[in-house]
Image (cartoon, rainbow, N blue to C red):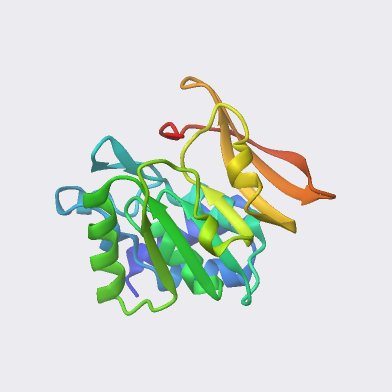
Length: 205
């Protein structure tokens, strides 16, 4: 574990009130540098999103941590991730949950993330290539769903794949302003809690 990784977790995550020990340990166990393009390696530990090609980004560490902690992941959970991207968030989820199903619509990104995560010996991640971002009904329902792209409104198809009592994290809003929402499924209806403003690439539905 590098000193840079330790410093990133301490100053950008723990120092900003992310206190769940399992989440912090997952971030210490997953080196962000492995998921950043080589030309941007010297920015790997900075608290900012980075371009990974195909008009997609790897999110800043704090946002990844905020979303991960808000999901309250249990070791027995099965998680659906919409937007594999670099695979960094996927790796964090896989450290905390029993199984992760991750969906990506851009084939080169999915293959790159799969190569990285396979090389790092992850065995509880299932990759799905889907030209839309409407989830993976085959393995539904899921304990938790995390969406790493912004929708204009809550996608009903995704919400239907969430277990009763489950939690979804999703950015919702326009291109210019989005709100990160924690959505719990209570009596088959969405109970929404705002976690603040954010900025993500758009969800292709």
